[in-house]
Length: 603
Image 1 (cartoon, rainbow, N blue to C red):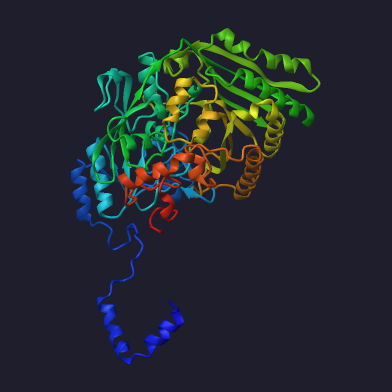
Image 2: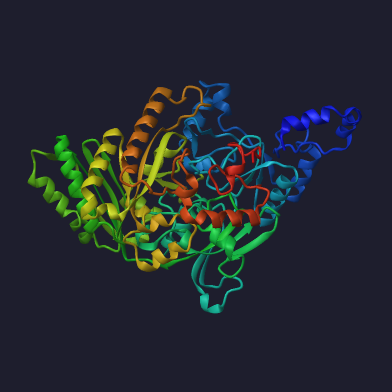
């Protein structure tokens, strides 16, 4: 219909003009977009309503304090000085409902405490919080370890489900998922939502002599790492954490406590294996398969400096060819850093003896020794192997490798409150930029390795570029690749020999911490150079995916990058179990219809 003619025709009917005012009384109003409520909104729950929730959860509803408050009120005071020390302690951060491990990200997010938190003790507490948030249109946030780089474990004006106190760990010699046949029984471990990986390793490896695939960082929460996919130091041997999932207990948006496994709610079970944390429900506990532990674990470290650009190009080319033959297999993991004129090796081994571990790197020693005018050692090769059972054994570490870990200095801290020395920088880190790309093994073939080497050289001239060999499954055992194929993670990981990571940030820094604000000039310069470095790699791997747990806040086409062809199926699961979008995370499945802060439905 011609709109102009229609309006002219209507205007020529005087009787209708008198009727039009009445239409406003009876016609439905234009639908308004759904908005979650904030504390200053009239619809914010009353004190009586909050008290009712508090009673339902056994008094475990608590107001959330701002961890930076002492420094905001008196930056030069003694209380602030004490707090600055605490902000360096990842376990202290984990113990505060208002803290996150990172303090924020340039032009993206800043850590902000919720208004209230339910300090959950069980799935029933979680269900009560879910029901309350849904019924009162609240922004809901879930925090276990609080390590989310994308800031998904915090939001201002929200209700927090805090699982910190749910840390029980139970070992099984013959676990049978509910509803499955007895023939599926296997050795496993059940871990509650508040546990950190050091808790799991202490129980499973140090005390039971088995292995459970988890994260490399000791303070990372079990659930967040697992639901994002999950890589650890030995993933080339044991695969992704998500692929070891046998069963999960999860509270969905309707407040139901469900069991998800291969035989019950199998679609939800699949989505939890890499579809992203805090998206399909609140996972309250998981059961993971455990594996036989090899006898030995170890590693090797060294730093080589090239004395010219030409020498650095040759070093990169030599290393990539060496890696293709020697490192893309189940025995090796962790990272190599390339930065302008240096190559830094920080690799770990599994299943190799002390002698085998060091012998692996003799070709590098020979390469450097053959060209003393081109190369020199900044740090000579060191390393070896020991009993794998000691890898997370804090008593053994304290006696034999005291410099490898940092111990929680608080007098009453559990002895397992330790973190790797290299991870200390992450506590209260403010990210400037972070890029990650899975690198396909095809780049190591003869027809591509030269061009890849040049791209890696170009990237490293812009910013330090890391290759994490344990975060790609090329070279892993066939059964581990098959198990990973049955997860929601982007299948690109199956053919990747490594995950490239290029990142920058400042520790003990926050826009809300007086005297410790980020240097914006440095931050923006780093972000610009990191983007250029990532573009250099993108040129040789244009369709490379990215790892949801370690990725850019501004990831291009995140649906394809994180999940590839699995995204459509994940979206259907999201619509089934959370049709109203109660669970929102940045760049998570189904977030497209929401504002960036998750408070308003925009489509």
